[in-house]
Structures are given as C-alpha cells and as structure tokens.
Length: 289
Image (cartoon, rainbow, N blue to C red):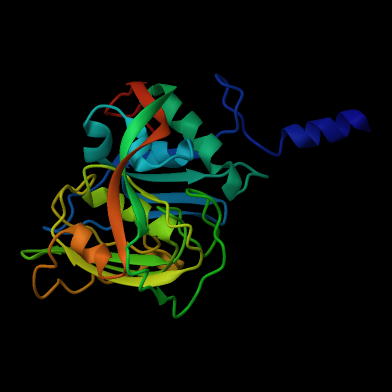
C-alpha cells in the first residue's frame, strides 16, 4: 500500500533530470515576431495548467524565476533586448506557485543560465510624501491582494507588481501612463522603467490608488521600439489579455519628478542595500524545442 502511494505521488509531477527540481512537462520557445512600430504588447500568464508568455525578454523570465525586480538583475544587454514567445505545460499536480522554480529549470536547461547573488548598496529614488502632504486618488475599483510577482492566477497577471492595471503609450511629447488600483510600491516599481535608478516606496502609505501621469522619461529600459502596451503591470490580463493603448499625452508632462509631485509625492536620491542576481552566463538562442 505504501509503495503504491509513493509510486502515485512520483507520477504527479515532472522533475528535471539534471537538477531534481520541478520542471515543465513540455515547453516551446520561439523568437517573437517583430512588433508594430512604437508599440510592444507583452502577455505573461500562467493558469489552467499552462504558461503563456508573449514578447517577453529573458530578463522578464529571470525576474519571475528568482522573484526579484528588474533592477535587481545584472547581465548582458541582450537579456533585456531579445524577445521570445514561450508556451509550457505544467506537470500534473503543479500550480501557479511552482512557476518560478519551473522557470529556473527552463532557463538553465534551454539557455544554459548560471547566476550568483550579491548584496550591494544601490543608488535609488525614494518615493516619499511632499511637504504639502499626498494628494492621492483612491482606487475607483480596488482589487484584492494578488499573488507575488510572477505567480498570477487564472484572472491575475503574471507581471510587474501583480495588482491593478497599467496602460502606457509613447508619443512625440513623451510617455503617458495610466495606472489603476495599484499601491505606491507597485507604482514605484513600474515607474522604475523610466528612471536611471529604481524607485523604492518609502511613504508608509497603504491602500490602492489611480494615477494618470505624463512625462518625458529619463530612460526606457526593456522597451525596444519606443513603446509598450500593458495591462496588469507588465502583461495584458484577463481572458485573452486584450487591451488598448492609452491615448498619447496632449502636451509634454515635464519630468517624472514633476509628474509625481502633482500627487503630493516626490523622489529623493538615496542609497539602499539590495540583493542582486548577477548573470554569469546565458545563451542568446535556446536549445531546440
């Protein structure tokens, strides 16, 4: 009886022969098609026993695999520039919470990824309340707590921040960002794409809020082509992942510092210790499907 139970348990999940870790049953990795001029649509979903990533960079995958943020990854430029479509089937018994472990195995097996971790003092922008106090707009439709980054459920995104939604468009006058039902920590993480340093929430303010920001970005990380359309903080969410790009800002919104100041917030340069994942080696092309 015990032997039968053990045999059944072993059949419930697939494990990598090289690492002994939980692995996807089967996975297809293909180069992503070129995106329309000025726009990139990214989809990162893991539900119903399948992982479906569209137009993702290797940096996106590393972020999810190691449960870290974009700015905690150091490696060659191509990990953020080259994009792929990835479809993978969960082994029996695996859930969305197993996605990071399975992605680690996938990246190791197919891209020969090796990494090490370091702790470094990192220059950051601290998001704090301005002298006049915050002027925040409470979320019209608050969302429930979502799983950690990279572990979205059937209706939740597997993307940055894991809460609410964000639409971005790049036009001749700059960047227009509309974010709904997100925390200030989520906002800081997502706006970090447009600054030379990561933005860390140090306001101590809880709750979810709506934002409409227009600004000229200092920097645009991981956005070849000059634009991106996203829902759910990095991936179109909901069935099918449909979304429409936000309208471009009608006039220049100034700097990102000006944009957040309109909400009674400001960005201050500080130093903060941070865990970093350093890519020691990674192949640009995966082994064959």
